[in-house]
Length: 461
Image 1 (cartoon, rainbow, N blue to C red):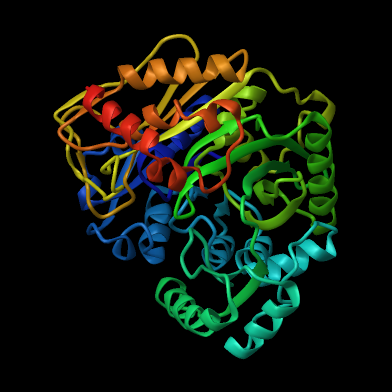
Image 2 (cartoon, one colour):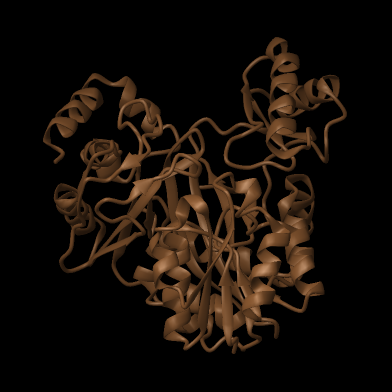
């Protein structure tokens, strides 16, 4: 096992890694920008190193500074968390050359799955179902139109090196394709320094279902069932749950089996998540794979009892999986709400000082957060304040518990989206478990949804 792990991240995920390391008797090193000098991950790590000014490119994305911090503290492994350098194959390779273990999959796997076109090709070769689309990178708008006419409109253009909704455009008719291609490609260049595009048939009412994969370096691999992530805005997830109300036991078994067979062919190791689009008929299609721990990993932990961060550390240290697929059981239901520092109506970021803070508690309530009273949410990073997770015997009780917990959560001094969550959990479609990725759009467009949100804002402490 590692003696000392440097955490190349910040916020709640850095704290989560620190907690896992402590339970494995591993010393920890926190890195931080000058904006995060008073952050909790700095306080609770065994050592801390300042790596630069607030902008990410000068601190958390500064590879030489991170490696220097690892060298001077004699860390023998680096955990990248999520975001930042977590899916950067070059960073993983540099760590390997410096004889520092990168806690994640091999660089080759990160590179394979990081490019969406190559990932589609690998997924197809491994037997995963794909939406009809372009066989590779599109040469230009003319080829995009030809492919679109072949697969049928509507289609969606996606950045080959992209993610998070950037470089992505839905096109419903041929005459709109050329402009959409130019706009999406320009966005991709700006976001990823790569304007390559590909195209898929667009599913009108998709559900976003993902399968958690865990594999060791000895050929053993299991899945930990699915998570539903369909409540999202502009492809950014807001509410996640496990198990999905839209996945039957038979479909769950099929998705797990197909995912495992594909990952065994690819030779996947450590943690990973296969993301699927599921249509109204229950047919699922490979979308992408994330080669890191996910923000929403707690819901899987809550329903399986498996600590994914400790698992990730142990697998990176070369241990064999200590459980089989038959050992993994679903128990109860879990829901996660991402509490962000943002306006609950417009979703505009709202950084600032937290002047009052009271997290909820009680049976089945978990709060993963790096916030505290008098802490200032900096404007330089994402707006995540906390992840509120509840677990109960079934989905209906989990929804009731989440409503109760949201009602107890007090965050003063800044605006948060707690009121949005309180309103969303009253929507009929969510209560029925019959919703898709346009849930938020429909909620805001409906008179009932708007009224619920207005009332929730008035009632939120």
